Length: 420
Image 1: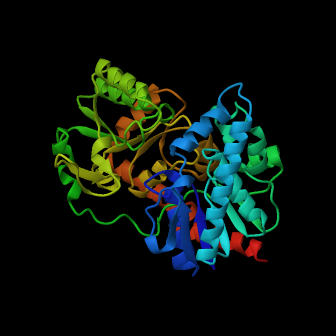
Image 2: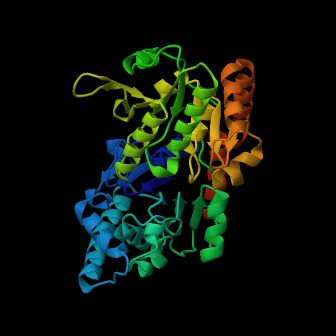
Image 3: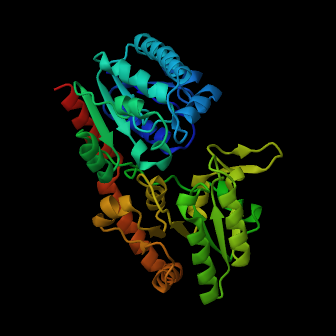
């Protein structure tokens, strides 16, 4: 079949873009289909892609409309309703041209029918599918999981398209069991759980030495314990807990700890970052904020400084912290298991529901760094044999439960249901 992936963005290393890429890899290389791409930002093959800048959620017109739709105590004015209709019509026409141009047999909307970052886009995709085009909608998180989408005047649009209550040749896919339950309880819609995956059948490539100078570049002593926080700097990532852990380890041992935070603070403001800098300073914990030197590709920045990929940093880390308060699934946790690193996990809900019951060996916490957490972390840092035993065990569990083979089987079943 010719399968069209649709979203507001397929570009960069956000979770939606990464998982869509994995789906397309399986669909093409293992199942023999051909994939095509439609979005407002793209880094996909040009000959198989249709760029529509109006589909990107970050456009000025889209942001302006979004603010009017979700502003507390707002109501839909004639101007707002007219703008929604105008943008929806344009996007629907663009989508129809995409389907016609590439002779699409099936569409895969990626989160665009779940989270209303671009309301007219969700409506346009719904209208496209409602004409009878088969679809597999991949939902990563729903609007009712975010407080900011529960205010404003967009309710009629949310009911219609996020997600749409369509039935014929329409499959809903979610990434965790909580989403499966909430979709059923809230909208009486059945869905298939397909977790995020990693290519555990093929271990990480051998170290080519590119990241060997990372510590030197950032002034990290070779004898320092390097703890990696492989996340963006946003409040829900719980980075203050990683700083607390490092502080308490330093107080218990003669070791110096360096916490490396791999990403920037992004679009949720700089205040959290500033507070973390002050916290680390008071706790005498060295933190390397590496976000401006870690990119999607290797290279050099405008002033000639070396740019690393996250995969260059994992091999040289001694320990990984993942103290997230909330996650839709946990890509960075799977990546940590992939690189066979011992890890601290805050027991966020999806971890408790879908990952922990499988029997992973990690240091767990429940919102605070206790003496037990510190003791177990120190033990793993000082006992290579134990750390290896844990990480090998985790890798095997991931191969059985979160691998490309698991994704392949799941996609085969979903497609068979749609096409009988």
